[in-house]
Length: 69
Image (cartoon, rainbow, N blue to C red; front, top):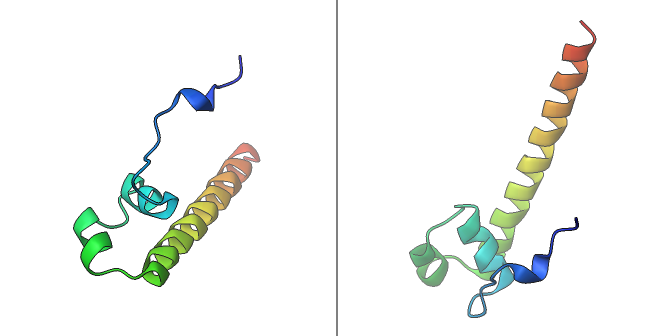
């Protein structure tokens, strides 16, 4: 059965970028409002996505190497 993504609640008063940062714990809300620029926020998101991608690749490599033994 396909996942019905329409059933999930969404933030309507925050930008998608702010939601991403808060959801992944990249910065507290107070910093988003008081200290971070849009560029800072986008850099945090980029860093997190690159980091997650690289972790995923490393995990795949570990699994592949582990299966060869």
